[in-house]
Amino acid sequence: MLRYAERLFKRVYLLMPRQGLKRYAHQMPEKLKSVETDKDPEFSEMVLYYYHKAAQTMEPALLKEMEKYPHMKAEERQARVTAILNLLGSVSTSVEVNFPIVRKNGTYEIISGYRSHHVRHRLPLKGGIRYALDVNESEVKALAAIMTFKCACVNVPYGGSKGGVCIDPKKYTVDELQTITRRYTMELLKRNMIGPGIDVPAPDVNTGPREMSWIVDQYQKTFGYKDINSSAIVTGKPIHNGGINGRHSATGRGVWKAGDLFLKDKEWMDLIKWKTGWKDKTVIVQGFGNVGSFAAKYVHEAGAKVIGIKEFDVSLYNKDGIDINDLFEYTEEKKTIKGYPKAEESKEDLLVAETDILMPCATQKVITTDNAKDIKAKLILEGANGPTTPSGEKILLDKGVLLVPDLYCNAGGVTVSYFEYLKNINHVSYGKMNSKSTSELILELMNSINESMQKCPDSGFPHICPNKKLNRIQQCTTEADIVDSALQTVMESAARGIKEMAHKFELCNDLRRAAYVWSSFKIFQAMESSGISQQ
Image 1: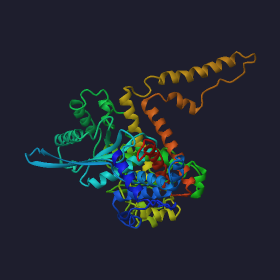
Image 2: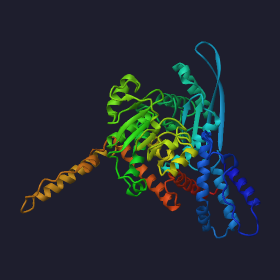
Image 3: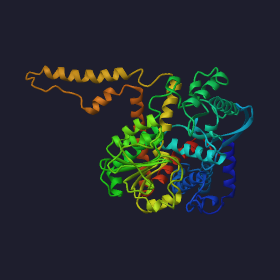
Image 4: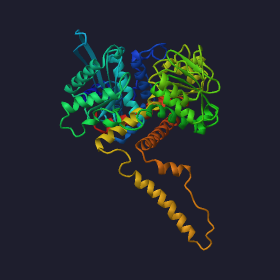
C-alpha cells in the first residue's frame, strides 16, 4: 500500500502545473455526482459520496496544515494532500474466496465469501462478518470504508474492514454452517487477511457468538496454535469464551447516548427550538432487533415516551407510551412483538407518523426522497447503517431536522468490541485488579470524614452520606458497569469533536459531514505523518 501511495503521489505531482499557484480543488468523482439526487443509490456509492463531500470541505484546512513544510512548494503540498485524499477514497485490499462444501443430502455446493480492507493506517483492522444473499464485493467494500470512519470518529485505533458469505443461513443445518464458517476462516487465514494483529472480525447480520467461537477454535487448532493472543482473533464471543459483559446492548446504548449528548446541549436544542432533555419527548423506533430494542429501552428509562415500534411484519402504536421493559418480557417469550396486548397494531407508516424523535435501527435506505418531506420528527438517531439516502437527507436538512449520523450514532458496538480485544490481549477482565480497592477507598474516605467531624468540640454535625453519583461510582465494580462507563466517556469525546467540526466549518445541522470531517482529519494525519507520499 505504501508503494502504491508513492506512485500515486508521483503521478499527481507530474500532472501539476510548474508555474503559478493555481490550486486544483478536490473533485467529486464523476460516477458519484448523481448520488445526491438518486432515489435508490448503491450503499457503496453513498459512503464514498459522503467521504468526498467531507474531503472537499476539509481540503483547504489540510493545505494550510501542510505549511509546516516550508521547503515544499505550493503545488507539492497540493499533490501530497490530493494523493492521501484519493488513497482514503479507495479500498486497499479485497479478496473473493470460493470453496466447495458437501451438503447433508450429499450434494455439492460452491460457497462465495468476501473480505475487504479499506486503509491500513491503523492495525489491526476491524469489521464484522455477515451471512446474507445480498453480500457482494461492492457492499463489503463500502462497509469496510464506513468502519474506518466509524472507528476514527470514536477514537478507536482500528482500520476498517468487512466480510461476508453469500448464503441464506436459514437454509443450512448447524453442521453445514459450522463447515462454511471454518472453511471461510481457513481461506482468509491462508491469505493473511485475518489475525489478532491484522484484522479482527466480529458478528454482523445473521452471525453471532456461536460463529465467533467456531472461528477462534479453528484458528487455535491451525495457524494460531502458538499464539498467546489467539482468542483476540475475533470479538463478540460468548462470555465464557473470552467475550465481554455489556457487548450485547452496546450498540443500542450508544444510540441513546449519542442522542443524549445533543438533547442535553442547549445550543443544539435551540437550533431546533426544543427544551433540553428527554422528558416529554415522543419516540418512534424502526426495528426491534438487538440495536432498536436496547435503544428503545434506554430512551424509555431516560424519560422519553416510546409511542411506536415498526417491524417488518407489524407496527405497534400507543399514544400514551409503550412499556419497553414489559415488551422485552413479551418478546422473550413469543419471539415477536406481534400480538402485544398493550399496544394496537397500526397500518400507518410510522416513519412519517407524528413524533419528536425517530430512530431507524433496522435496514438501509428507509428514508428517501419519497418520504423525507413527510417525516415529522425533528431529531433522527441513525441506529442502522445507511438508513438515509443523500437525497432524503438534503430534504431533512433543509427542513431544519437534526440528524445524528450512523458512523457516530451506532459506534457503541465497535467501541465495546475494542474493550473486548484489550481484555483478550491483556489477559485480565475489567475490574479484577482494582474495583474492590476503589470501592473501599470511597467507603473509608466517608468514614474518615465522619470520624474527624465527630472529634470536633461541638460535635453537632450530621452524619455525611455519599450522594447518588458517588454511590454509583462506588458500586461500579462489575465488568458491565466499567464497560458502560467507558463507553459513555468515548461517546462524549466523539460528540465534542463532531460539534467542534460543525462550528469550525460552519456546517449548521449537517452533522454527517461534520462527523466525516472529524474522522478524515485524524486518518489523514496518521497517514501523512507515517511517511506516505513523503519524498
